[in-house]
Length: 232
Ligand SMILES: Nc1nc2c(c(=O)[nH]1)N[C@H]1C(S)=C(S)[C@@H](COP(=O)(O)O)O[C@H]1N2
Ligand SMILES: [Mo]
Image 1 (cartoon, protein in one colour):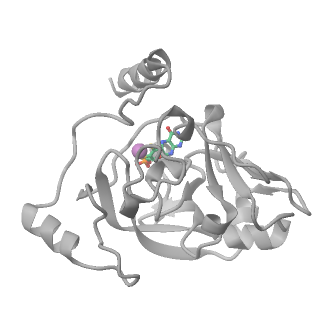
Image 2 (tube, helix red, strand yellow):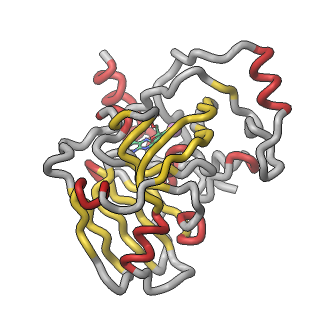
């Protein structure tokens, strides 16, 4: 059932050819109560921005937004870090687990309108990886390359933030396949389509390369507090 929905979403997109259509699956949101929504909407983050970005509502648990999963398992997964770096490398799952691990608690915001507050992820900061591969330029871009050709893109300056990680665990447990196992990107302060699931490679580039959703009518900068859902 779910599979059919996923396929029809992709097919629909292909047929729509560039016009703006909905990301993800319809319905099935389990929202928090109105009183809780209002409390979160009124509360502020340490950086002074509202906890709930404009036009978002909080949900009780993470939703499975679909996409075409990769087939890698922890045992055979590896990730190429390549492009404009001084030292390209390939990391296995075990090697990733041997780098400095961080736990983050963050809110994630899907462009379809749901926000998951206080989600807990474990993984490795992108900054840690950058310290190893040494990007050739500080002003460049990162292209996340995921299974089946899905990509997303961010400026290196965004990826350097302390809360940007390559995650292998969610809520204290290894990621489920649906949510990007073995490893996915988590970029809390951009709409969630930047957070590629089933990550296969990280490419550094001096020129930007709009990703899967970014080249299909969604914003390239994707700042939830500016409501950058669609191109400006
Ligand atoms: N590889 C891949 N990553 C992806 C997607 C996808 O279709 N394929 N969808 C994106 C979108 S639009 C969202 S909202 C989040 C959803 O993650 P979740 O299913 O774990 O909630 O994954 C993002 N990463
Ligand atoms: Mo999304």
